[in-house]
Image (tube, rainbow, N blue to C red; front, side):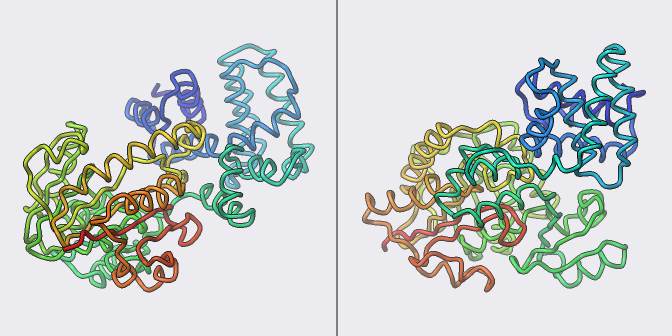
Length: 448
């Protein structure tokens, strides 16, 4: 493994993802942990793997014009897709170098015939640069799907919901690399002080418009600084930071975070409470408890009590009631495709329907734990109304003791207020709005 180059390692990961139907981030971590390569090469491997998966439909469409109906071995096909990704989307890699490396890998892994085929296909693509501009036959949804590399069923759904232009914008944003954002820990330092300190160390830091605790970083290893290790900040997407603003907890309150791991939103709630009060942080996965514990310790937070269990069963645990309950529900994750490119290829319409049933059950179950006059916040990192607005409307219709909290707008940053629904109780952030994750947040209040 130590002798393999970045492209060879990336090809190994792509092959394993396909063979085992596994997640690229897990396969990538396993392979990189066992590889003796430089940080730069590790970065290239990561970009090649995620980029090839992200652009798979576009690459497949181009490749099909050169191999036609020929049966190509899985590893050879992945090698061709990997090479096409470099040719089209990585400016810093010369086209000839991409072709040469592919041919050498084909020789090592196969035979001269395969190497000749790989060489021929890639050189044909270079001779016909207009191939990247060709569109498939069919309607706009089909063309958006191929051009922007998203599943056609999902694109069709979004076109119905958001229209063609908005759908294109969503897809384009999903294909952009996510920027790094961090959340300052106000118990240790102010945002302005941290920005100044980071800049003095050569890190390009800018204040976020989406959160009073948010900072955007341009490059650098954010989890590797002494500021991170000493608990001055947490890595978190800007959209995700809006959730704690919506919960709006106050010092001394009793709060439940029902699906808490890895603890980003939980610790944010604790910071807003100035580490005064009590937070029960529940998660169904026992191994994730340690993530919440270590994050709390690093940030200097002592009010979080992690517990393990199915959120559906929490009403039977004798926990009492809470001033604030957060249900950051499991979802399809269509708002975070830019971070997890496998998502769009692995999900189906049936997945949306089945997870929506679970989300509704969770909302009903956890509503029992909200104290009279208390607040229940429902959030997801998806952009599917079936998992978002539809769930909330259905719940309120069937639970007259809960109302949509029209004051949500007041607790959100000014740039987001115009995006709040006319009910005033929920907001849908799309990936292109702020180049952040797609997120849905709703706030309900239990009548006193």
